[in-house]
Length: 375
Ligand SMILES: [Zn+2]
Image (cartoon, rainbow, N blue to C red):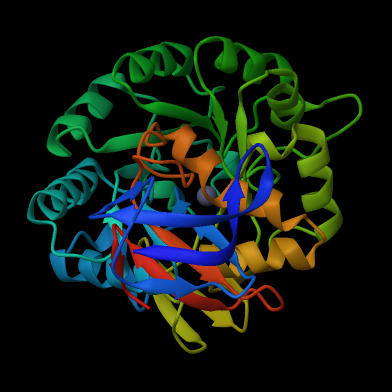
């Protein structure tokens, strides 16, 4: 396959006018067969979402084979081609079921977006910053539990969120790193010094920056200041237009640089569904338009109802340059969980997974997943 007349995403050089060729499932130097005329549109890598909970009525935490398949199918249809869905704060046996379900899905590989791993957003979080997580199942950081879950997942746990002020957190961070798991600081009241120590211990990621952590205060810069001060730490942003004001999105991109931003959808099962009330980690959420809140707590945002593709467009509406927004939805998240050897950019030898976007409204013109045209 050959894509001509496109402006192809390159992380260093911007959008480059060149042909993009595929051979089988990979990007190649030359290609034959189908020719797609991009007509001046953008060619970007398949998106990578490392933090979302569900879509189309299904929640990853329900741990059903059909549910995960439906999520994977929906995400692929949106251009989100590599997914690392997140589990909620739940009892260990339910977390184990989530891990086993992920491992089984990866073994069987029945199509849809590739489930590249899973993110344990809970249960090692702070009570004071639990947000929409269920307080009943919060747990002190526990490396032995993480090891059991990693075994159940057959190595698929890629990301774990921890509140570093909780007892045993620093040891936990070191152990998780040894297991090859990226550690993220989040749902936390940690002050600057505690967060700095967490990053020194090996944490390298911040879970939904601004949300579920102290605000950036000039005398108490907390996690945001510590993440900024530690080169190499990446920061997630929920860019659905509801969770974070546009000025704060622009501020984060300027502060951290586009190479450190990871856009996430944090989407819930209500994504791709009509307004209504939906179950959520043992609680209920209410969805009105773009807002999802915990029933009875209308001030507690519960996650988004926007896919990562929607977040990419929202970032551009917030005046983030398209190139930076694309990078934050592709290469950066791929690097964060160590899968950038095969996705995240459009270099030769990587998966031929890409999206053709209209140059004016960024609508999807065509999609190719692992060398196969899917839209
Ligand atoms: Zn969260």
